[in-house]
Image (cartoon, rainbow, N blue to C red):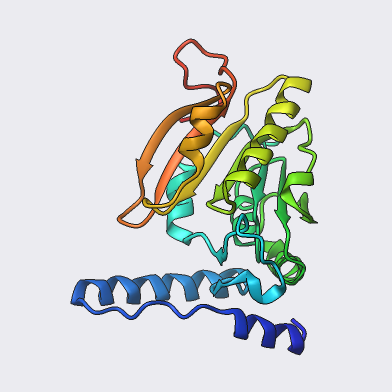
Length: 244
């Protein structure tokens, strides 16, 4: 990472809240140990919480960067039945590339990241280079662009979002996914994670009849997962080939 970029990241980093209770401190210690272990294992740097307005992004529809917890991602993936070398994974708001790296440890045919901020995208590229020897999926594509303008490829079957956008951007992204499904009919599953008190997903579920909620799960005290599908899934049970 270039020194100037390191300085920008340092200035943009949001300090975590101080832990007061004994149990919260223990949880935080375990969390920090897990973060450092996995960062060193993959040779990547993603463990920061960043306010993206420091990069000139002032659109309120674009949320700050906060990497997905390593352990939580593993929990999330247990809900999927990945079809090896067939399913294609896209992370909207891919930031420094942590989820792209983690998804590539699974047998996806391809893993794609879409990130608006050039500085985070540059770090993600370096992280992918450093982690590549440990990845199962070698076909990785990173796109630095506005998610609203991303044309969803016809092979994409899994969409991941960690509360990346406000209502306007989120609905446009969902409309683009649905357009892709209409043009190339297939099962597409959405894995949407968010803090329990913040989500625009419910509004989208109420607006788009083709966006169907399948499961809603609490992942600890501070994170929720909602699994949705775009359109009707093939099997009669309504679970689909992609959901465990």
